[in-house]
Length: 564
Image (cartoon, rainbow, N blue to C red; front, side, top):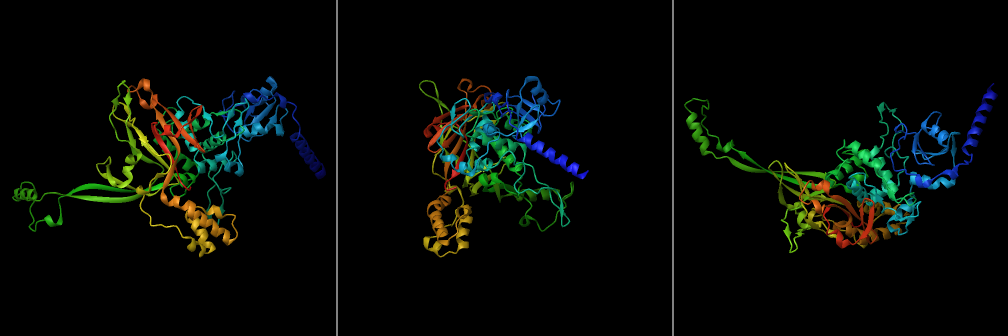
Protein backbone atom coordinates (compact mmCIF):
# COMPACT_ATOMS: atom_id res chain seq x y z
CA UNK A 1 0.00 0.00 0.00
CA UNK A 2 2.84 2.33 0.86
CA UNK A 3 4.64 1.52 -2.40
CA UNK A 4 1.47 2.24 -4.37
CA UNK A 5 1.14 5.67 -2.71
CA UNK A 6 4.79 6.52 -3.42
CA UNK A 7 4.40 5.47 -7.05
CA UNK A 8 1.30 7.64 -7.43
CA UNK A 9 3.13 10.65 -5.98
CA UNK A 10 6.12 10.12 -8.27
CA UNK A 11 3.85 9.80 -11.30
CA UNK A 12 2.08 13.04 -10.36
CA UNK A 13 5.43 14.80 -10.09
CA UNK A 14 6.48 13.48 -13.51
CA UNK A 15 3.21 14.69 -15.00
CA UNK A 16 3.75 18.15 -13.50
CA UNK A 17 7.29 18.30 -14.86
CA UNK A 18 6.14 17.17 -18.28
CA UNK A 19 3.29 19.66 -18.19
CA UNK A 20 5.69 22.40 -17.06
CA UNK A 21 8.09 21.73 -19.91
CA UNK A 22 5.35 21.28 -22.49
CA UNK A 23 5.74 23.49 -25.54
CA UNK A 24 2.82 25.78 -26.30
CA UNK A 25 1.60 25.67 -29.94
CA UNK A 26 -0.21 29.01 -29.63
CA UNK A 27 2.72 31.39 -29.14
CA UNK A 28 2.33 32.68 -32.69
CA UNK A 29 -1.10 34.09 -31.76
CA UNK A 30 0.41 36.69 -29.37
CA UNK A 31 -0.08 40.32 -30.41
CA UNK A 32 2.57 42.43 -28.67
CA UNK A 33 1.24 45.66 -30.16
CA UNK A 34 -1.94 45.27 -28.08
CA UNK A 35 -0.21 44.74 -24.74
CA UNK A 36 -0.18 47.50 -22.12
CA UNK A 37 1.02 46.58 -18.62
CA UNK A 38 0.88 50.13 -17.22
CA UNK A 39 -2.83 49.96 -16.47
CA UNK A 40 -4.29 48.89 -13.13
CA UNK A 41 -4.31 45.07 -12.81
CA UNK A 42 -8.07 44.56 -12.48
CA UNK A 43 -10.40 42.13 -14.20
CA UNK A 44 -12.24 43.61 -17.18
CA UNK A 45 -15.32 41.48 -16.39
CA UNK A 46 -15.70 41.61 -12.60
CA UNK A 47 -13.61 44.81 -12.08
CA UNK A 48 -11.87 43.01 -9.21
CA UNK A 49 -8.20 43.60 -8.48
CA UNK A 50 -6.10 41.11 -6.61
CA UNK A 51 -3.05 38.86 -6.74
CA UNK A 52 -4.50 36.50 -9.39
CA UNK A 53 -5.16 38.68 -12.43
CA UNK A 54 -3.92 37.57 -15.83
CA UNK A 55 -3.39 39.44 -19.08
CA UNK A 56 -4.49 37.86 -22.33
CA UNK A 57 -1.51 38.03 -24.69
CA UNK A 58 -3.79 37.90 -27.73
CA UNK A 59 -6.16 40.82 -27.07
CA UNK A 60 -4.42 42.55 -24.15
CA UNK A 61 -7.40 42.46 -21.74
CA UNK A 62 -7.14 41.53 -18.07
CA UNK A 63 -9.05 38.63 -16.50
CA UNK A 64 -9.16 37.08 -13.04
CA UNK A 65 -8.18 33.49 -12.21
CA UNK A 66 -7.38 30.54 -14.45
CA UNK A 67 -9.49 27.75 -12.91
CA UNK A 68 -12.78 26.49 -14.34
CA UNK A 69 -15.62 29.03 -14.51
CA UNK A 70 -13.23 31.97 -13.97
CA UNK A 71 -13.28 34.91 -16.41
CA UNK A 72 -9.86 33.99 -17.83
CA UNK A 73 -10.88 30.35 -18.36
CA UNK A 74 -14.18 31.31 -20.03
CA UNK A 75 -12.41 33.88 -22.21
CA UNK A 76 -9.99 31.21 -23.45
CA UNK A 77 -12.85 28.83 -24.27
CA UNK A 78 -15.18 31.39 -25.87
CA UNK A 79 -12.68 33.50 -27.82
CA UNK A 80 -9.94 30.99 -28.53
CA UNK A 81 -7.26 33.07 -26.81
CA UNK A 82 -4.99 30.61 -25.04
CA UNK A 83 -1.86 32.52 -23.92
CA UNK A 84 -1.92 34.42 -20.61
CA UNK A 85 0.63 36.02 -18.27
CA UNK A 86 0.30 36.43 -14.50
CA UNK A 87 0.56 40.18 -13.91
CA UNK A 88 2.12 39.84 -10.46
CA UNK A 89 4.42 36.83 -10.78
CA UNK A 90 5.26 37.20 -14.48
CA UNK A 91 4.65 33.50 -15.27
CA UNK A 92 3.09 32.42 -18.57
CA UNK A 93 0.19 29.95 -18.80
CA UNK A 94 -1.83 28.25 -21.50
CA UNK A 95 -5.57 27.96 -20.91
CA UNK A 96 -7.86 26.07 -20.71
CA UNK A 97 -5.34 23.20 -20.45
CA UNK A 98 -3.71 25.13 -17.60
CA UNK A 99 -0.01 24.44 -17.91
CA UNK A 100 2.91 26.83 -17.47
CA UNK A 101 4.85 27.90 -20.54
CA UNK A 102 8.61 28.46 -20.44
CA UNK A 103 10.01 29.84 -23.67
CA UNK A 104 12.86 32.27 -24.40
CA UNK A 105 10.77 34.04 -27.03
CA UNK A 106 8.68 35.51 -24.18
CA UNK A 107 11.64 37.28 -22.53
CA UNK A 108 10.76 40.62 -24.13
CA UNK A 109 7.27 40.47 -22.60
CA UNK A 110 8.74 39.60 -19.18
CA UNK A 111 11.14 42.56 -19.42
CA UNK A 112 8.29 44.90 -20.35
CA UNK A 113 6.08 43.61 -17.52
CA UNK A 114 8.70 43.66 -14.73
CA UNK A 115 12.00 45.32 -15.77
CA UNK A 116 15.11 44.23 -13.88
CA UNK A 117 18.58 45.76 -13.85
CA UNK A 118 22.03 44.35 -13.23
CA UNK A 119 24.65 46.36 -11.39
CA UNK A 120 26.76 46.71 -14.52
CA UNK A 121 23.84 48.17 -16.45
CA UNK A 122 23.06 50.65 -13.66
CA UNK A 123 26.59 52.07 -13.69
CA UNK A 124 26.35 52.73 -17.45
CA UNK A 125 23.06 54.62 -17.42
CA UNK A 126 24.60 58.06 -16.96
CA UNK A 127 26.96 57.65 -19.93
CA UNK A 128 24.61 55.80 -22.24
CA UNK A 129 23.89 57.45 -25.58
CA UNK A 130 22.47 54.45 -27.44
CA UNK A 131 18.81 54.74 -28.42
CA UNK A 132 16.45 51.83 -27.88
CA UNK A 133 13.51 50.71 -30.01
CA UNK A 134 10.01 49.84 -28.88
CA UNK A 135 7.81 47.23 -30.54
CA UNK A 136 6.58 49.77 -33.11
CA UNK A 137 10.14 50.69 -34.15
CA UNK A 138 10.17 54.12 -32.53
CA UNK A 139 13.47 55.19 -30.95
CA UNK A 140 13.80 56.53 -27.41
CA UNK A 141 16.54 57.19 -24.87
CA UNK A 142 16.02 55.16 -21.66
CA UNK A 143 15.26 57.47 -18.76
CA UNK A 144 14.03 60.27 -21.00
CA UNK A 145 10.60 59.11 -22.11
CA UNK A 146 7.21 60.77 -21.72
CA UNK A 147 4.47 60.11 -19.18
CA UNK A 148 0.78 60.20 -20.08
CA UNK A 149 -1.30 63.04 -18.64
CA UNK A 150 -4.30 61.53 -16.84
CA UNK A 151 -6.38 64.73 -16.51
CA UNK A 152 -4.18 67.38 -14.83
CA UNK A 153 -1.49 65.00 -13.65
CA UNK A 154 1.31 67.04 -15.23
CA UNK A 155 2.46 68.00 -11.73
CA UNK A 156 2.89 64.36 -10.70
CA UNK A 157 4.65 63.64 -14.00
CA UNK A 158 7.12 66.48 -13.47
CA UNK A 159 7.78 65.37 -9.88
CA UNK A 160 8.40 61.76 -10.95
CA UNK A 161 10.74 62.81 -13.76
CA UNK A 162 12.77 64.97 -11.37
CA UNK A 163 13.08 62.31 -8.66
CA UNK A 164 13.82 59.59 -11.22
CA UNK A 165 16.99 61.49 -12.15
CA UNK A 166 18.35 61.75 -8.61
CA UNK A 167 21.04 59.08 -8.95
CA UNK A 168 21.06 57.49 -5.46
CA UNK A 169 17.26 57.33 -5.33
CA UNK A 170 17.08 55.98 -8.89
CA UNK A 171 19.73 53.32 -8.26
CA UNK A 172 18.01 52.22 -5.05
CA UNK A 173 14.77 51.43 -6.86
CA UNK A 174 16.50 49.95 -9.92
CA UNK A 175 18.19 47.40 -7.67
CA UNK A 176 14.78 46.34 -6.38
CA UNK A 177 12.29 44.17 -8.22
CA UNK A 178 8.59 43.39 -8.10
CA UNK A 179 9.38 40.58 -5.65
CA UNK A 180 10.81 42.92 -2.97
CA UNK A 181 7.70 43.44 -0.86
CA UNK A 182 9.26 43.87 2.59
CA UNK A 183 11.76 46.19 4.23
CA UNK A 184 15.42 45.17 3.98
CA UNK A 185 16.55 42.49 6.48
CA UNK A 186 13.06 41.50 7.63
CA UNK A 187 12.27 38.91 10.29
CA UNK A 188 10.29 36.14 8.67
CA UNK A 189 7.68 35.54 11.33
CA UNK A 190 6.55 36.82 14.69
CA UNK A 191 8.08 34.63 17.33
CA UNK A 192 9.43 34.72 20.87
CA UNK A 193 13.15 34.69 21.54
CA UNK A 194 14.25 34.79 25.15
CA UNK A 195 10.77 35.73 26.28
CA UNK A 196 10.69 38.82 24.03
CA UNK A 197 8.31 39.32 21.13
CA UNK A 198 9.87 40.25 17.82
CA UNK A 199 7.76 42.17 15.35
CA UNK A 200 6.99 40.62 11.95
CA UNK A 201 8.54 42.12 8.83
CA UNK A 202 7.11 45.42 7.69
CA UNK A 203 5.57 45.42 4.25
CA UNK A 204 6.57 48.17 1.83
CA UNK A 205 3.63 50.48 1.12
CA UNK A 206 1.75 50.30 -2.17
CA UNK A 207 2.78 53.86 -2.99
CA UNK A 208 6.48 52.96 -2.74
CA UNK A 209 5.94 49.82 -4.84
CA UNK A 210 4.12 51.83 -7.51
CA UNK A 211 6.85 54.49 -7.60
CA UNK A 212 9.62 51.90 -7.82
CA UNK A 213 7.86 50.10 -10.64
CA UNK A 214 7.41 53.38 -12.52
CA UNK A 215 11.10 54.31 -12.13
CA UNK A 216 12.17 50.93 -13.49
CA UNK A 217 9.87 51.31 -16.50
CA UNK A 218 11.18 54.81 -17.22
CA UNK A 219 14.79 53.54 -17.35
CA UNK A 220 14.04 50.27 -19.15
CA UNK A 221 15.55 49.73 -22.59
CA UNK A 222 13.08 46.94 -23.49
CA UNK A 223 9.78 48.78 -23.60
CA UNK A 224 6.88 47.66 -25.79
CA UNK A 225 6.06 51.36 -26.27
CA UNK A 226 8.11 54.53 -25.92
CA UNK A 227 5.94 56.10 -23.18
CA UNK A 228 4.75 55.13 -19.70
CA UNK A 229 1.31 55.44 -18.12
CA UNK A 230 1.55 56.46 -14.41
CA UNK A 231 -2.02 55.40 -13.61
CA UNK A 232 -1.12 53.09 -10.73
CA UNK A 233 1.03 55.71 -8.98
CA UNK A 234 -1.62 58.40 -9.43
CA UNK A 235 -4.22 56.13 -7.82
CA UNK A 236 -1.94 55.29 -4.90
CA UNK A 237 -1.20 59.00 -4.33
CA UNK A 238 -4.91 59.79 -4.38
CA UNK A 239 -5.69 57.02 -1.89
CA UNK A 240 -2.80 57.77 0.48
CA UNK A 241 -3.53 61.52 0.51
CA UNK A 242 -7.32 61.05 0.75
CA UNK A 243 -7.74 62.79 -2.63
CA UNK A 244 -5.73 65.83 -1.56
CA UNK A 245 -3.25 65.12 -4.36
CA UNK A 246 -3.67 63.29 -7.63
CA UNK A 247 -7.14 64.37 -8.75
CA UNK A 248 -6.15 67.97 -9.56
CA UNK A 249 -3.11 70.21 -9.81
CA UNK A 250 -1.55 70.98 -6.46
CA UNK A 251 1.21 73.26 -5.26
CA UNK A 252 4.42 71.44 -6.07
CA UNK A 253 6.19 72.31 -2.82
CA UNK A 254 3.44 70.80 -0.66
CA UNK A 255 3.03 67.78 -2.94
CA UNK A 256 6.77 67.02 -3.06
CA UNK A 257 7.19 67.37 0.72
CA UNK A 258 4.24 65.04 1.32
CA UNK A 259 5.47 62.52 -1.26
CA UNK A 260 9.01 62.31 0.17
CA UNK A 261 7.58 61.81 3.65
CA UNK A 262 5.35 59.00 2.38
CA UNK A 263 8.33 57.32 0.70
CA UNK A 264 10.20 57.52 4.00
CA UNK A 265 7.33 55.97 5.94
CA UNK A 266 6.62 53.38 3.25
CA UNK A 267 10.22 52.14 3.43
CA UNK A 268 9.94 51.59 7.18
CA UNK A 269 11.40 54.91 8.26
CA UNK A 270 10.63 56.69 11.51
CA UNK A 271 11.98 59.70 13.38
CA UNK A 272 14.80 57.46 14.64
CA UNK A 273 15.18 55.01 11.77
CA UNK A 274 16.64 56.51 8.61
CA UNK A 275 15.95 55.49 5.01
CA UNK A 276 17.38 56.25 1.60
CA UNK A 277 15.13 59.33 1.41
CA UNK A 278 16.64 60.94 4.52
CA UNK A 279 20.16 59.95 3.51
CA UNK A 280 19.75 61.84 0.24
CA UNK A 281 17.62 64.89 1.05
CA UNK A 282 17.76 65.52 4.81
CA UNK A 283 19.72 68.48 6.14
CA UNK A 284 19.71 70.44 9.39
CA UNK A 285 18.96 74.09 10.10
CA UNK A 286 19.35 76.14 13.28
CA UNK A 287 16.30 78.31 14.07
CA UNK A 288 16.60 81.25 16.47
CA UNK A 289 13.22 82.59 17.61
CA UNK A 290 13.12 86.09 19.08
CA UNK A 291 9.97 87.19 20.95
CA UNK A 292 9.08 90.22 23.07
CA UNK A 293 7.53 89.98 26.54
CA UNK A 294 6.30 92.75 28.86
CA UNK A 295 7.03 92.41 32.61
CA UNK A 296 5.42 94.65 35.21
CA UNK A 297 5.87 92.65 38.41
CA UNK A 298 9.63 92.83 38.90
CA UNK A 299 11.47 92.25 42.19
CA UNK A 300 13.06 95.71 42.04
CA UNK A 301 9.72 97.43 41.58
CA UNK A 302 7.98 95.89 44.55
CA UNK A 303 7.32 98.36 47.38
CA UNK A 304 8.38 97.47 50.90
CA UNK A 305 5.04 98.68 52.26
CA UNK A 306 2.18 96.37 51.59
CA UNK A 307 -1.10 97.86 50.42
CA UNK A 308 -4.65 96.65 50.78
CA UNK A 309 -5.61 96.03 47.13
CA UNK A 310 -9.24 95.17 47.81
CA UNK A 311 -11.88 97.20 45.97
CA UNK A 312 -13.20 100.10 48.05
CA UNK A 313 -10.32 100.02 50.53
CA UNK A 314 -8.47 103.15 51.67
CA UNK A 315 -5.29 102.09 49.90
CA UNK A 316 -6.91 101.59 46.46
CA UNK A 317 -6.11 105.10 45.22
CA UNK A 318 -2.52 104.90 46.50
CA UNK A 319 -2.07 101.55 44.78
CA UNK A 320 -3.23 102.95 41.43
CA UNK A 321 -0.78 105.85 41.71
CA UNK A 322 2.06 103.42 42.51
CA UNK A 323 1.32 101.30 39.46
CA UNK A 324 1.42 104.36 37.25
CA UNK A 325 4.90 105.17 38.53
CA UNK A 326 6.21 101.68 37.60
CA UNK A 327 6.25 101.40 33.77
CA UNK A 328 6.26 97.89 32.24
CA UNK A 329 9.57 96.63 30.96
CA UNK A 330 9.88 94.81 27.62
CA UNK A 331 12.46 92.07 27.40
CA UNK A 332 13.56 90.03 24.38
CA UNK A 333 13.79 86.26 24.67
CA UNK A 334 15.68 84.09 22.23
CA UNK A 335 15.30 80.36 21.80
CA UNK A 336 17.52 78.28 19.56
CA UNK A 337 16.58 74.84 18.24
CA UNK A 338 18.03 72.55 15.57
CA UNK A 339 15.56 70.91 13.22
CA UNK A 340 15.84 68.66 10.17
CA UNK A 341 14.45 69.47 6.73
CA UNK A 342 13.87 67.75 3.40
CA UNK A 343 13.47 70.97 1.43
CA UNK A 344 13.98 74.68 1.99
CA UNK A 345 11.07 77.02 1.28
CA UNK A 346 12.06 80.45 -0.08
CA UNK A 347 9.79 83.46 -0.46
CA UNK A 348 10.16 85.39 -3.70
CA UNK A 349 9.94 89.18 -3.16
CA UNK A 350 7.04 90.78 -4.97
CA UNK A 351 7.92 93.26 -7.67
CA UNK A 352 5.62 95.39 -9.85
CA UNK A 353 5.02 94.46 -13.48
CA UNK A 354 5.60 96.99 -16.26
CA UNK A 355 4.54 97.13 -19.88
CA UNK A 356 6.94 97.62 -22.75
CA UNK A 357 6.40 99.79 -25.82
CA UNK A 358 4.35 97.08 -27.51
CA UNK A 359 2.05 96.57 -24.55
CA UNK A 360 3.57 93.33 -23.33
CA UNK A 361 4.45 92.65 -19.70
CA UNK A 362 8.06 92.91 -18.55
CA UNK A 363 8.69 90.14 -16.03
CA UNK A 364 11.08 91.24 -13.24
CA UNK A 365 14.04 89.13 -12.18
CA UNK A 366 15.61 88.38 -8.81
CA UNK A 367 18.93 86.58 -8.14
CA UNK A 368 18.72 83.42 -6.08
CA UNK A 369 21.37 84.72 -3.67
CA UNK A 370 18.96 87.51 -2.66
CA UNK A 371 16.17 85.02 -2.04
CA UNK A 372 18.52 82.95 0.13
CA UNK A 373 19.17 85.80 2.54
CA UNK A 374 16.62 84.16 4.80
CA UNK A 375 19.29 81.57 5.70
CA UNK A 376 22.32 83.86 6.12
CA UNK A 377 22.17 83.61 9.92
CA UNK A 378 21.76 87.39 10.32
CA UNK A 379 18.43 88.42 8.81
CA UNK A 380 15.31 88.04 10.95
CA UNK A 381 12.00 87.28 9.24
CA UNK A 382 8.50 87.64 10.64
CA UNK A 383 6.63 84.56 11.91
CA UNK A 384 2.88 83.98 12.17
CA UNK A 385 2.75 84.32 15.98
CA UNK A 386 4.25 87.83 15.96
CA UNK A 387 7.82 86.72 16.71
CA UNK A 388 10.83 86.89 14.42
CA UNK A 389 13.09 84.06 13.33
CA UNK A 390 16.61 83.73 12.07
CA UNK A 391 17.87 80.71 10.14
CA UNK A 392 21.35 79.28 9.72
CA UNK A 393 22.16 76.00 7.98
CA UNK A 394 24.07 73.51 10.11
CA UNK A 395 24.39 70.75 7.54
CA UNK A 396 23.51 70.51 3.87
CA UNK A 397 22.33 67.22 2.34
CA UNK A 398 23.92 65.52 -0.68
CA UNK A 399 20.90 66.65 -2.73
CA UNK A 400 19.35 70.01 -1.84
CA UNK A 401 15.73 70.83 -2.74
CA UNK A 402 14.76 74.51 -2.95
CA UNK A 403 11.06 75.34 -3.08
CA UNK A 404 10.37 78.81 -4.51
CA UNK A 405 7.01 79.81 -3.07
CA UNK A 406 5.14 81.42 -5.96
CA UNK A 407 1.51 81.14 -4.88
CA UNK A 408 -0.28 83.01 -2.12
CA UNK A 409 -3.94 82.66 -1.25
CA UNK A 410 -6.15 85.35 0.26
CA UNK A 411 -9.81 85.43 1.12
CA UNK A 412 -10.92 85.77 -2.49
CA UNK A 413 -8.43 84.12 -4.85
CA UNK A 414 -5.00 82.60 -5.34
CA UNK A 415 -2.27 84.83 -6.77
CA UNK A 416 0.99 83.89 -8.46
CA UNK A 417 4.29 85.74 -8.31
CA UNK A 418 5.75 85.58 -11.86
CA UNK A 419 9.18 86.93 -10.88
CA UNK A 420 11.98 85.01 -12.58
CA UNK A 421 14.61 83.75 -10.15
CA UNK A 422 18.06 83.68 -11.75
CA UNK A 423 20.31 80.87 -10.52
CA UNK A 424 23.57 79.24 -11.63
CA UNK A 425 23.43 75.81 -13.22
CA UNK A 426 26.91 74.80 -12.04
CA UNK A 427 29.16 75.56 -9.06
CA UNK A 428 26.48 77.15 -6.89
CA UNK A 429 28.44 78.06 -3.74
CA UNK A 430 26.45 77.80 -0.48
CA UNK A 431 29.37 77.92 1.95
CA UNK A 432 28.40 81.33 3.38
CA UNK A 433 24.99 80.00 4.42
CA UNK A 434 26.45 77.10 6.42
CA UNK A 435 28.07 77.36 9.83
CA UNK A 436 31.82 77.54 9.45
CA UNK A 437 33.71 74.31 9.83
CA UNK A 438 37.31 74.28 10.98
CA UNK A 439 38.11 71.26 8.91
CA UNK A 440 41.17 70.69 6.79
CA UNK A 441 41.94 67.66 4.64
CA UNK A 442 44.95 65.58 5.73
CA UNK A 443 48.19 66.19 3.89
CA UNK A 444 50.06 63.58 1.87
CA UNK A 445 52.63 63.15 4.65
CA UNK A 446 49.91 62.59 7.26
CA UNK A 447 48.21 60.02 5.04
CA UNK A 448 51.44 58.04 4.59
CA UNK A 449 51.89 57.86 8.38
CA UNK A 450 48.34 56.54 8.99
CA UNK A 451 47.49 52.94 9.68
CA UNK A 452 44.95 50.87 7.78
CA UNK A 453 42.17 51.56 10.30
CA UNK A 454 42.89 55.30 10.19
CA UNK A 455 42.83 55.34 6.40
CA UNK A 456 39.49 53.59 6.31
CA UNK A 457 38.21 55.98 9.00
CA UNK A 458 38.96 58.93 6.68
CA UNK A 459 36.79 57.43 3.96
CA UNK A 460 34.09 56.42 6.43
CA UNK A 461 33.97 59.97 7.82
CA UNK A 462 32.89 61.29 4.45
CA UNK A 463 30.66 58.26 3.66
CA UNK A 464 33.00 56.92 0.98
CA UNK A 465 33.91 53.60 2.60
CA UNK A 466 32.66 51.73 -0.48
CA UNK A 467 35.69 52.98 -2.43
CA UNK A 468 37.98 50.67 -0.42
CA UNK A 469 35.70 47.66 -0.52
CA UNK A 470 37.99 45.56 -2.74
CA UNK A 471 41.33 47.06 -1.63
CA UNK A 472 43.64 44.61 0.15
CA UNK A 473 47.16 46.09 0.17
CA UNK A 474 48.02 49.11 2.30
CA UNK A 475 49.89 50.96 -0.45
CA UNK A 476 46.76 50.74 -2.63
CA UNK A 477 44.66 52.16 0.21
CA UNK A 478 47.16 55.00 0.74
CA UNK A 479 47.03 55.87 -2.96
CA UNK A 480 43.22 55.75 -2.89
CA UNK A 481 42.94 58.08 0.13
CA UNK A 482 45.47 60.50 -1.39
CA UNK A 483 43.50 60.63 -4.60
CA UNK A 484 40.23 61.18 -2.70
CA UNK A 485 41.64 63.94 -0.47
CA UNK A 486 43.20 65.80 -3.41
CA UNK A 487 40.31 65.58 -5.89
CA UNK A 488 36.95 64.86 -4.25
CA UNK A 489 37.35 66.07 -0.67
CA UNK A 490 37.77 69.78 -1.55
CA UNK A 491 34.35 69.64 -3.21
CA UNK A 492 32.85 68.17 -0.03
CA UNK A 493 34.25 71.00 2.06
CA UNK A 494 33.45 73.74 -0.48
CA UNK A 495 29.64 73.22 -0.32
CA UNK A 496 29.25 73.66 -4.09
CA UNK A 497 26.23 72.30 -5.97
CA UNK A 498 25.22 71.56 -9.56
CA UNK A 499 21.65 71.63 -10.84
CA UNK A 500 20.09 68.21 -11.43
CA UNK A 501 16.41 68.96 -12.07
CA UNK A 502 14.22 72.03 -12.41
CA UNK A 503 10.42 71.93 -12.10
CA UNK A 504 8.63 74.97 -13.53
CA UNK A 505 5.06 76.21 -13.60
CA UNK A 506 4.18 77.94 -16.86
CA UNK A 507 1.25 80.37 -16.77
CA UNK A 508 -1.45 80.51 -19.39
CA UNK A 509 -1.00 83.84 -21.19
CA UNK A 510 -4.58 83.81 -22.49
CA UNK A 511 -6.07 83.75 -19.00
CA UNK A 512 -3.51 85.85 -17.15
CA UNK A 513 -5.18 87.65 -14.24
CA UNK A 514 -8.41 85.63 -14.46
CA UNK A 515 -9.34 82.47 -12.61
CA UNK A 516 -7.00 80.27 -10.62
CA UNK A 517 -3.42 80.59 -11.97
CA UNK A 518 -2.43 77.23 -10.47
CA UNK A 519 -5.13 75.25 -12.29
CA UNK A 520 -4.80 77.18 -15.54
CA UNK A 521 -1.03 76.74 -15.78
CA UNK A 522 0.99 73.58 -16.36
CA UNK A 523 4.10 71.92 -14.97
CA UNK A 524 7.17 70.77 -16.82
CA UNK A 525 10.59 69.52 -15.84
CA UNK A 526 14.19 70.06 -16.99
CA UNK A 527 16.72 67.26 -16.50
CA UNK A 528 20.27 66.71 -17.73
CA UNK A 529 21.97 63.80 -19.43
CA UNK A 530 25.72 64.22 -19.78
CA UNK A 531 26.09 67.71 -21.32
CA UNK A 532 22.59 67.90 -22.85
CA UNK A 533 19.51 69.31 -21.09
CA UNK A 534 16.01 68.02 -21.85
CA UNK A 535 12.62 69.63 -21.37
CA UNK A 536 9.94 67.10 -20.39
CA UNK A 537 6.23 67.89 -20.26
CA UNK A 538 3.97 64.85 -20.21
CA UNK A 539 4.58 63.03 -23.51
CA UNK A 540 6.72 65.79 -25.00
CA UNK A 541 10.48 65.34 -24.60
CA UNK A 542 12.82 67.69 -26.42
CA UNK A 543 16.33 69.06 -26.14
CA UNK A 544 16.83 72.54 -24.70
CA UNK A 545 19.63 74.96 -23.93
CA UNK A 546 20.85 75.58 -20.36
CA UNK A 547 20.48 79.34 -20.90
CA UNK A 548 16.71 78.90 -21.30
CA UNK A 549 16.35 77.07 -17.99
CA UNK A 550 17.21 80.18 -16.00
CA UNK A 551 14.53 82.17 -17.87
CA UNK A 552 11.67 79.87 -16.84
CA UNK A 553 9.34 80.32 -13.88
CA UNK A 554 11.18 77.84 -11.68
CA UNK A 555 9.20 76.35 -8.84
CA UNK A 556 11.36 73.52 -7.40
CA UNK A 557 15.13 73.23 -7.84
CA UNK A 558 17.11 70.07 -7.05
CA UNK A 559 20.87 70.53 -6.67
CA UNK A 560 23.54 67.84 -6.37
CA UNK A 561 26.55 68.38 -4.15
CA UNK A 562 29.81 68.17 -6.04
CA UNK A 563 31.77 65.07 -5.15
CA UNK A 564 28.67 63.13 -4.06
